[in-house]
Image (cartoon, rainbow, N blue to C red):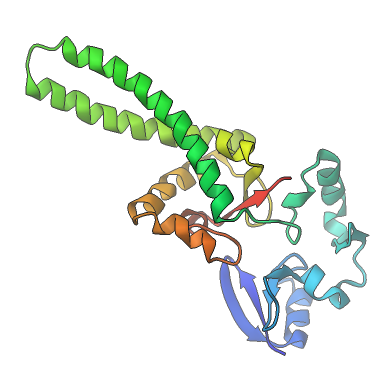
Amino acid sequence: MNWYYSLNGQQTGPVTEAQLTALISSGAINTSTLVWKEGMPDWQAISIALPSNNTDAPQIGGVAVPAGQKDTFVQQMREGVASTAPGMMQYGGFWIRFVAKFVDGIILRVAGLLLGLIMGFAISGMKDGGTGQSIVGVMMILVGIGINVLYETLMVAKYGATLGKMATGLKVVRSDGSPLSMGLSCGRAFAGMLSSFTLMIGYIMAGFDTEKRALHDRICDTRVIKTR
């Protein structure tokens, strides 16, 4: 039976089970690497799909954890974030992400209205007509984009989720379950614009991807997972 495995976000294979074992032994992949073969409903970590390859690994919560990761995994369990460990992730699907985005949209819309009121007062006080109003209009668009990016960047980098995602029990992590850095969070916020500019197709992709990745998740190698 041929297997496929995920490496750097790309599907690789096919390989035999013996070759897969050899890759683990060589360190090219590990027991948290996601694998798939015909007949499996979804991708799973090697520790789950091929438990025979993990006989020396301690079992925690039914998942084989490499000895070198045991302390980290136990700490994650104590902190209630073990669901971010590779192989235990439950991905947030399209509709729950849609609800989270809708909630964030309301929050940002309110912020945009307040900004509009401020800019409206500024425009009403101008005496140079259309030119000044056009400049203010462009500034409103740029500031609006800045607010969206800043909101997404700071919330995801600090808390792992925006307010909308918090409300729906979602969290953004890297493919290995680790939190996003400020730089990656900012990059993901800008990449999210591409998902919007493609007539929302970038977001719709999450409904058809095995790991529920939208376009910006693919670009930044991130995952949106359930925390409850």
